[in-house]
Length: 243
Image (cartoon, rainbow, N blue to C red; front, side, top):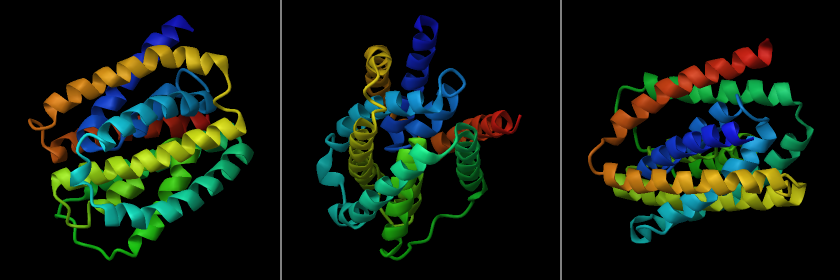
């Protein structure tokens, strides 16, 4: 497990770097890459622990910037989506899960690359759909951030408000995901915790670096670069699931 642990630590660093700058997106990098090394269930459990540390670190970094009203709109359906996601995760075949993860990642990458105009402000009611979708994808794929990010990016928030509110949303979503993984037994594996001893510090280092890059790199530039990486990793997952 030693070579895999070192590679997973590098993946964790990259994921935390993205999360530290944008407030989401870690699992869109870590889970697709990690499933080339370990089973999907192992990757989900491992990076849930790292993401939990990252989410609390970012969520409580500047809590005054968070728009609490937006967070409160998302929470009820995050709860419902998490419960539904656990049901699907337990019953979904591994190949089907990998294929759906690849399609999900590809869809988000294409959405990010295709958007050219500034996002319009949408109605608050869309928080219900975003919360439900995020709860499901958080548990099923370890990636609840995109639905929250798509919704909040179209609510007219400042960069600081977006990042802080995303921190609150992902903090809630990941906490529920970890609780669900404990209940289902996914976090009761000794090897997950042993590997986390290497991966979590790498993730915290990624956050440390991200805080220094946050004011120097535009969010738009970063998301374009991430989208290209996601396009490649999503395509790879789809091909692996099919062949």
